Length: 164
Image 1 (cartoon, one colour):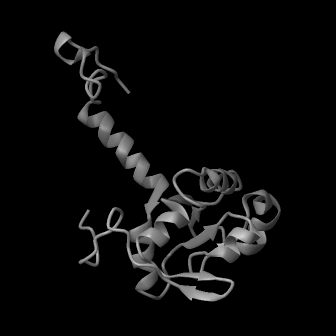
Image 2 (cartoon, helix red, strand yellow):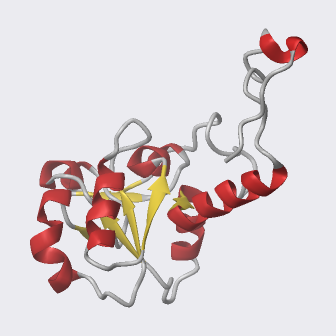
C-alpha cells in the first residue's frame, strides 16, 4: 500500500493526516476483507432462508459460554480443541464461519487461524455473538430458544434489513 505525504492543509486534520489509499489499493484491501469476514445479518439471512447454507457456523467459545447462548445450528468447538477435533466435526469441503463473543474478543480470529492452518476455508463473523443478539436474531441457551428486540444502534427497527 502506498502512503502519500501530507500537505500543510491536511497536516492538522487527523482524518487526512495520512492520505487515503489510492482507489486501486482500497479496492484490493476491502475486497480482501470481504474474503475474510461475514456480516452477522448476512449469516442470519442465509440461515433463515433454510436449506443448505453452503457453510457451517462454528462457536469457538467455552462450554459455559455456549450454554449461555449460541447461534442456532452452530457447531460448538472451542478454539483450544480445534487441532484435535476439527477433522471429526467438520467437512473440509464446506467453508466455516467462526464466531466468539464480540468485537472486543479475538477468539473467532484465533479459531479461524487454527482452522486455516488445518486446511479449512474460513471466514470470521464480524460482531460475534454480541451482535447476533443485539441485532435481534434468535439464539439458543441451555434453557431453550430466546430472542431480544433489536438494538436501534445496531439494526433497523422498522425494516428487515439495513440496506447496506
